[in-house]
Length: 158
Image (cartoon, rainbow, N blue to C red; front, side):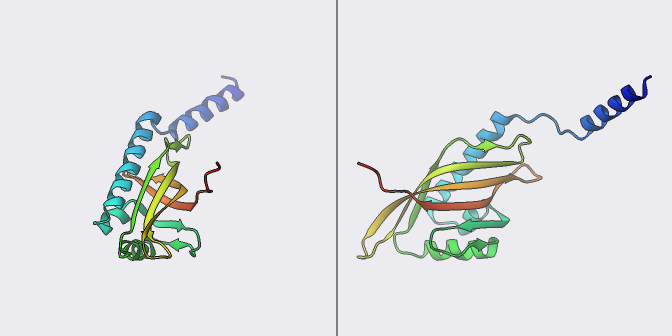
């Protein structure tokens, strides 16, 4: 066999050996969309801090308007606990379809967020924002949020 053909065959064999089984992108996208929707529901209920926090990875970063970065699960747990102690606090979001990386190990999700909390006069007010969450598929196949960024939505133009 020609040495160039041998090298080409060897490279093909090696590249094929490193490939993972083909990813069912539609199934993974659906799985992540459901996980994100479940997280929104659990967060809106505001009853189970452990369950809410479980959707973030241990090394996650949360970036909220006007706050320093919140890094790691312990800091995120403290942030969630403090938020849920605010009288009348509620959060809920509706997400778009997840966008997966070609290898299916990472994804991002855009969302519309509604947060309710006491306003300046003490009465409950709802604010609207946008967020992007970056997700990583862990070794066991579970999707966990690694970066959670929110900002305020601009006022609606009339």
